[in-house]
Image (cartoon, rainbow, N blue to C red; front, side):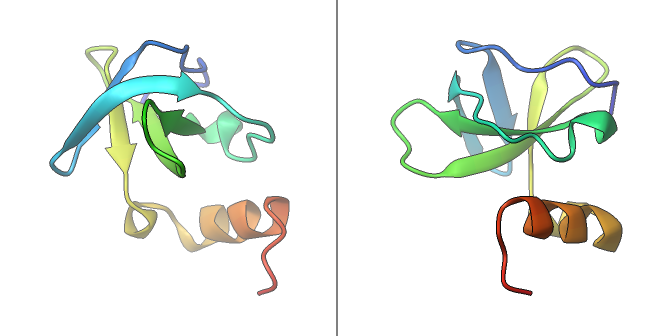
Length: 82
């Protein structure tokens, strides 16, 4: 994945049989330094994670694609009770 360029509303995100337009890029962004962004897709009430791939597209990520350290950072930033 490429560097920390944030997604913008309207950008397309695809992966794992899902596609949609980014509607919201909420705060905080605890994994931005790793090029991983929290977004909400249009019409969805929940957030997803995306990373930019070489062609500039946004790829939807699954939690099992993150390292243990990234998962710990995400959980701590989002108020997990772990």
